[in-house]
Image (cartoon, rainbow, N blue to C red; front, side, top):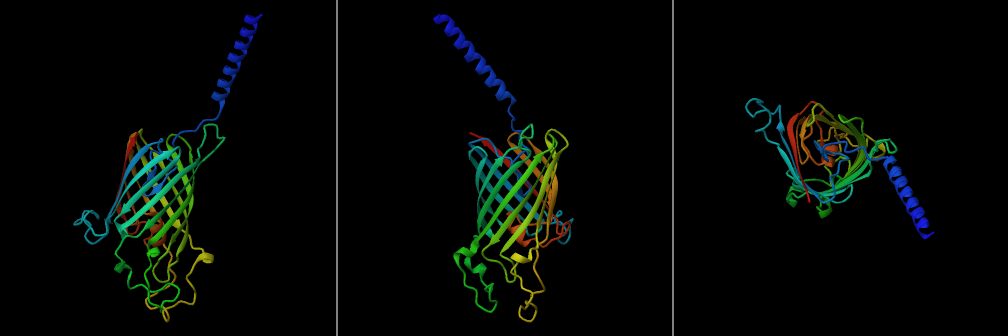
Length: 312
């Protein structure tokens, strides 16, 4: 009797275990990374490496292609106005990345974080990737470089520098989808803020973003990034009463232009190299969203992004 009972219990256990395994196999699984790495030109993607991964990022932009004699300065390679950013990113937990970077322009130091909240699944139980990210940057220029500015609220007052004037911020929500092994697209909305801006500029800016990649070989892809600052009167600080009579040198409302960048990416499991051309000189997103005054296809400059990944 005991042997019979034991056999029945073992049979039930095996049956339940096999049923559980079948149920687990039928559960919807993540579709896999939509992008080869977490940086797409200057933008961020939903991709976050495995836990305990360390990533080194090099971002470089040369001077404008049309700066004087294009042949003499090798299409901007020798031109003034080059910009570079070096960064380290670490993954302390699944789908969470923390990083720090330094940028030549304005001697920025930035702290950043990225979290992929939802991952697209194979059976479309979750049809998209959802990622949130943000950074806080500190302008590291000498205090004297901030002189000569006037108080934003009252242009007639003398500007008084405060340490908090160095800070700027960027927050973004990204929604993306891997349509196939070759095609991935994502769109997003962002909010940028700078504690100190030039006279008659806005402290806040909302923007829309669209970028993606199209693979044309196992390791190579066409890539693009488009960022559009929005003109929203309800949050604008530019008043219609400001004119040349009470604002010398001011020639009208200040509205940053959209930036467009496109190029090619070559990637491996631990490396990625991207070369592109674009119309914005900044690398930090809040700087481009608030200061780019080049129309698309104007002020074009060559740039590249290199990433190197170590897994521990």
